[in-house]
Each structure stands twice: as structure tokens, then as C-alpha cells.
Amino acid sequence: MSKKDLTRRDVLQRAVWLGAFLVAPHAASCGPESGSISNRSARPNFLFIFPDQHRFDWVPWNLSVPVRMPNLEELASRGVRFNWAFTPSPLCAPARACLASGREYERCGVRNNAQDYPIDQTTFYKLLRDNGYWVMGCGKFDLHKASPIWGLDGKNLIKEWGFSDGIDNSGKQDAVSSGRDKPKDPYMAFLERRGLRQAHIEDYRRRSQYGKSAVFPTPLPDDAYCDNWVGQNALNLIRSAPKDRPWFLQVNFVGPHYPWDITESMSKLYEGIDFPQPNGGDKLTPEQNVAVRRNYSAILTNIDRWIGTFVDELRRRGQLENTYIIYSSDHGEMLNDHGLWGKSVPYQPSVGVPLVIAGPGTKKSIVSDALTSLIDLTATFLDYAGVHQPSDMDGISLRSVLEGKTRKHRNYLRSGLEQWRLVFDGRYKLVKGYPERGDVCLYDLVKDPLENHNVATQHKDIVESLSAYIVREQGENK
Image (cartoon, rainbow, N blue to C red):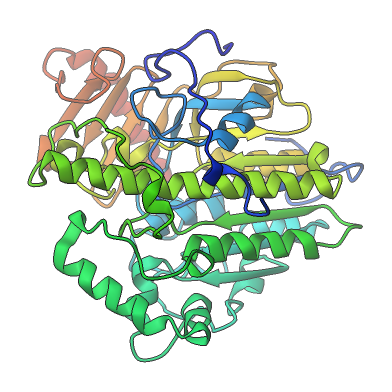
């Protein structure tokens, strides 16, 4: 689909926003054996930018939301952006386990945030490393969500997961809750060395008193702000990567996950800019909703600044043309739509994620309606790396879509968490086991993209046909 063929979610054409703050800080293959290399020649690098809790529609090409991400727009102009990318499970630990394992939710080994990733279960990181890649990562991995064992250097489990080098830090709230007495992760250890740990802890204590409406700036300076610390770690990893080997780097920014703490300079980014009110929001005033959305957007604009920095560094190193750059997120954020916050629910702001991919051989400025799951990224990484995908992985490589050989990818998408499941066929989304809105819900996302009208009783035939996919998949995946 060309960029002129806009869907309901594209809302006319992309917006281009410029500002001084946005300048970079320095101003599925087949083979005889799974896990083996099919082609070692000129293997590409991968830069995977993976922020936490970025919802699908909070993007600059959606003109109803004035978020500024010019570097993400530039990336989309050099590659493919996807309208229908879903997380296999809208919760941190399960989503990241699905990605690491390349498996659907029922088979990923992590049912909720109270479970760690099975240490003996393979990851695509291991497959890349075992086949010659230098595999790096930094930021919030959340593969041991139930166990606060990052290590002060952030290297406690990275080798076991399949990384060659990296720094694993906790998420926003876990860092503070685990580090009240003394640091337990590398970010809090960094703040301790800077004499800022107690100020950060006190700031989060104060925020807890205000709940979602806590939008005041953090006392931390820009260079000690967690996303900037993660971004600098990523830049250091790029610079230290061996020049004689292909590399993979996953950058796990902790934003825009709640709480929406921003620095003083970031607080100026959206001053005076209005945002749409939530769809069916509750409790907060209109002014408070706008303030929250300004902070959420400021966090994304700051992350976008790092995208530009990484691209500049790759260009300086002569590696840009041989590097795939991928931008997505583990799940979305409700932002008070339907009166809900966070994720864990089957609505689009929770399960839908942005996805942009650009690199060698990808078509340019393409907008795709291909149905895509995060587990397809696992398959895509292995495909382009020339590593055969194990048969027990569920992802499907996006290579044919990226290279313009096909428009269709999957017939349906799945997502789930605990008791509920959903299946989406490109128009209708069936949700089962979510009693808060009715045990069986069917939404026509073409006519009703905000999911305000349950049409299950009017379309019993569609409910029946889509139910077969849920039952069959759950039966196969037990």
C-alpha cells in the first residue's frame, strides 16, 4: 500500500514538526536445521528501539494528536510503517517473553508479571549470538520481572539470555521500590554516585500522592533522566561493538511508561498545546487529561531525539546503509480512554503498538495494512540474519512485506492475558473472557475504531467464525 492510500488511522498526511529541542544531543526461512546460518555474506546489523508503553496512535502521522517525532517520521519515509501491529500480550513481562521466545502468549513461559522468563528456554538473542552476531542490549528487559536481580552493573543474566554485552536496568517503579534502602540496579547505582538517589525516591513518593495527575517535573537534570541514561548507554554500545562482526542492539527505553515524570526542559515542549480528550474518560478534569497527554508526548519526543542521535552515529561509522532500524513497543497505554489507565486490557490503545522498519532492501514510504504481531519481529531478525527459525517459534518473517513482494501477511492476529483472549481479522475484533465489558464482545474497527459499540449480537456468524480461531489456537498451545 502506498503512502497515499491512507487508512482511517492515518488521518490525512504526516505532520512535520521542528524545534531546537529535537536536534540530536550532540547539537521465515526454511532450511535443513533450525538455528543454523544459511548465508554469512554481508549480514546486516539491527538497531531495535523498543520503548515501554507507546500506544499505536500516538504517532506524528496521526494529525489528531500533536505529538512531535520528526526522526521517527524520517525513518518511516525510508521504510515501512504498519497500521495493524499488535502485542501478543499487553503486559510488560509476557510481551517481552513472547518477543524473546518468538512464541504466542500461551507458549511463551510467562503468564504475568509475577513470573520470570524460563532460563532454559531459548531466545532469538541466543540464536543470533550462537551464529556469529555480537548481541547487545540496554534498558528495561523485564525478563526477570519477579526477581530483583539486575546486579549493580546490570549484567547478572544477560549472558544467559543470549547477549554478548549490555546493561539491564529495572523499570521506573521497580527501581524506586527495590532501591529505597540501597541500589539494586545500575540506574539507581548511577543516581547514588551522582548524589541524586534520595531526591528521585522522594519525587516518586510525592507522585504517588497525586496519582495519574502528577505531571510536575522531576528534580533530576537532563543527563541523569533515565531515558537519557539508557540512550547514552546505547550510544556507548554502538561505539564499542566489534567492527569485524555483525551486531544486534535492543534499546529498551523505560518511557513513556507511567509515571509521566519529565525534566524541566522537557516540560516546555508542549506548553500551550491542546490535546484531544479521552474517549469516555473518568475522574480527571479536562485540564488534567491534557496535562498528562503533554507529558506522555514529551517523553516520546525525547526518545525521538535519541533516534536521531543513533542514526547520526551509524552514518558517521559508515554503517547506516547496512543496518535495519526497527521501532516498536511492548504494548500501549490507555490514557484514560474508556476510563482506563495502563494496559492489560483488550482495547486498541492497550494492544496496538507502533511499528516502523527501514533498512537494506525495504521499500520506502510504504504504509502497510498487513496484520503484524511482535513475534513476527523475532522471525524477521532471524530471516535477515540468515539464521534458520526453530520450528517451535510462532512468528512469521515480514521480509516479503518489507521488500514489496506481498501485501498480505497474516489472516488474523491474537492477543491475550490471563483469562481473556482476542482475535482480529483486519476488520472485526472478537474479545472473549473480559467480563468488565461483557464476556463476548465484537467490534467493527472500520466503522467503530474507538470500540464503543459491541455488535456481537448483530453478527453471530462472525462471532462463531472468529471463535474457532481462539479455541483452536488455545487448544494447540496448551
